[in-house]
Length: 320
Image 1 (cartoon, rainbow, N blue to C red):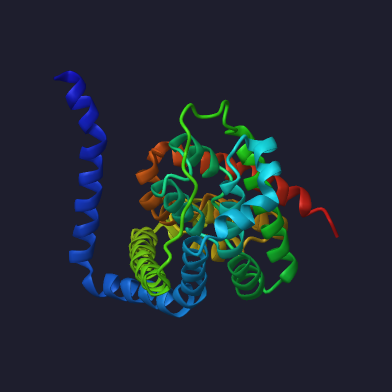
Image 2 (cartoon, rainbow, N blue to C red; image 1 turned 90 degrees about the horizontal axis):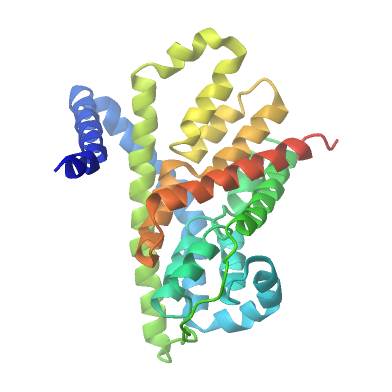
């Protein structure tokens, strides 16, 4: 009985947090309605147009059987570095091209088709969970920092961190059972409808997490976290950006751009993108949980990726 009660403690705290969040929404409905609208606006105007086409195309490529052709190019590299199956090269390609959460969703597609095992999925998710160049160069470098060099530093450091992170979680030995080759449906009409329907449903997951996590950030603003940190003077922006990084990377990146020291701001921004925050973690977990990847296991892997990427970003900041 004692063990049962101890196991329920996290659930109790989670319930209290949810009830507190609901109480805030009831106490200040106009504030949270505006917050939800901003989240929906961000999703509809920025995330959906930039991610949905990539998402649809990634599913289409997978269903059309491009897995084998693209995997061959990097098969030897991923086997040598990570002892991972050749399909992981395909996942890495799509993850770096399309961004979150395409890497996680592609892992799930391959796992559900029997092309990779559970051990493979756990290994591959350690280096195939990345943001895309559109966000890092366009949004961070162009819109947030208004400095293309910043976008390039974030991109290079982020990818280097992901690649090195995979070495930490390298698969120790091959699986005992044989996985099946990925097969694509022959019906073209069915292929298109399957890709468009799955992309649409998955984008709704993404949008929902963006809205909720944006409201969580606004809750911190509502309770006065910015004012509470104002006495730190020049250190308030770095601390605030670090806190926001735990929830949502875009809002965290905006705070990073306000840091007085640019190198520090870029390093923290790289950490925010590599960690992804609660929003990206939940998006990834939606798919990876079906592959046997635990929530805290995912947190650990994203945490180490974040640390490695920040080191690379800091060192790259010394390049004139």
